[in-house]
Length: 213
Image (cartoon, rainbow, N blue to C red; front, side, top):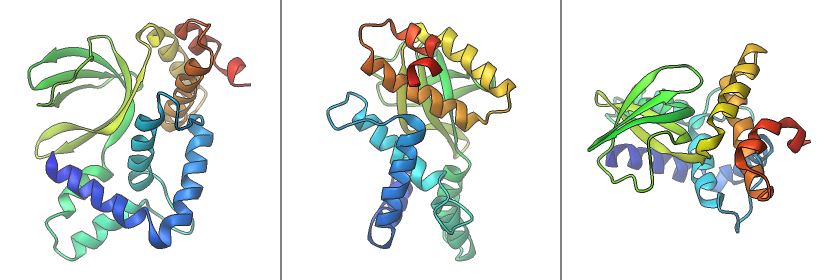
């Protein structure tokens, strides 16, 4: 896990400043447009900032580029025979989705991918305080060293909204929306929960597009 963290930190450090500073600004604006804008005093701000940086280096294709920063770095390391290439490749092939917690055990968490139906066993030695069976969250899973690990994206959704999330996801996928479209629209609804505190969270997800205008 420390090796994966170090690889991700190196990517963020390389592509998050200097000549890439303007690109970060453009990326942040695009990310906020897709997932809902949050502010420094919002409860989601820290988690969303962490998720943005991970998305920025792993998924986003910069202006004038053909692949995301992580994929570019993987090719460079691979061609140079650098052992770190495998770690960066693990990040490149990671999967961001909406998951439900199905079981908790010491050192292991079982998840169901609500968009694709696959089941995963994630190796996790850290204490996941507050996490319960039935929780729904946007997570990134990374396969490395024959194990599945968590990335840094942890955006929790109200447990009561599970049915509404699944219904909306199925409807969007049936109409040809991408998994990313689904995840990002659900992320917008999570932001709206903080704006409509007078309304039951599940209802916010049910009304969805009407609330987002």
